[in-house]
Image 1 (cartoon, rainbow, N blue to C red):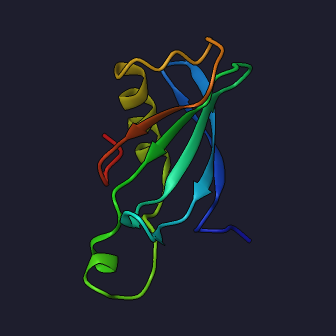
Image 2: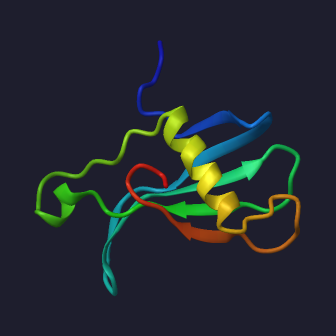
Length: 106
């Protein structure tokens, strides 16, 4: 049985393997209001993670029931390309780097 709402996965972008996992679901922050979901992305056999924060779904801002974006390989691939073009260096050492992406992962 397949799980359509997967919380982890692997994607191949430009011949490189990246693993991702759901770091945080959309939630209401006391200080900042609604925060979007965050995924953690790491190149296989690399040291440095990238944390990609999506905007909060519009339905939450309108008071509708909770939910999150559906994560598919194309969205994660766009996230990888957005993070690398923004300066993420997976092979470097250090703290995870945070990036904000839009709902499509760009």
